[in-house]
Image 1 (spheres, protein in one colour):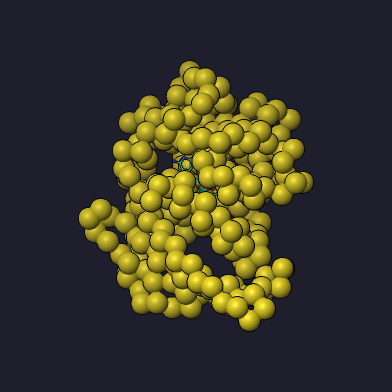
Image 2 (cartoon, rainbow, N blue to C red; image 1 turned 45 degrees about the horizontal axis):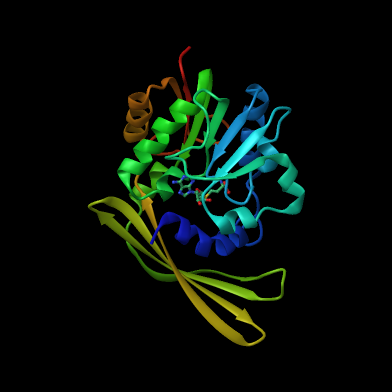
Length: 252
Ligand SMILES: C[S@@+](CC[C@H](N)C(=O)[O-])C[C@H]1O[C@@H](n2cnc3c(N)ncnc32)[C@H](O)[C@@H]1O
């Protein structure tokens, strides 16, 4: 199944989880808002989803939200639609001119959601192409996923939705070595006035080590790469950091 079809099916669950089942992560929103203030000029968010970061990435100049999935694009709140110019498209074939954006971001493990290595390389090469000379690219991944082992089917949550339905997620984790990836088999059961339906979504997340990501960025042409281990910009530590944020410069 193509990534776009997967996200078309997954959108309603992803969007329910972000902000309804689990609270918003304020330090994340604050970091993206701060980065946006530090880098004025046009901004591009790759894999912008349903605009969760639109408020943070809104600035005085235009912010472009690039997203392949129809359902993720349809999930934007009316109040966020004026904050960014939404463009349907993929990171590996960006419909933008070379050197257009002083700030380019690919947040929240978006790159790991692309299972094919050659497409991940293509996205980083494209990010380099569209970044303006002297501009920066911010990439967020989670190397910690690689430490996760296979897990049996387990209930993750059982939550009431604002529309009166109930959503239950049961998940099985499958750690694979070739290709190096983590497969999440997610069983979403919706109960609506006594009637129950289950949808199965499988998300294949690529492993992303610090070394792999730095190499990918350098091969694309980026330099002066800063590595943070969390949204507070603390230095990255392979054992302790919950995530990896890489800020890379395109030379002039
Ligand atoms: C984990 S979600 C993050 C969405 C949003 N940035 C957020 O933080 O809520 C990853 C997003 O990347 C998008 N995506 C998947 N493959 C992509 C590709 N090849 N190019 C650009 N975006 C892609 C998905 O459709 C999805 O919306």
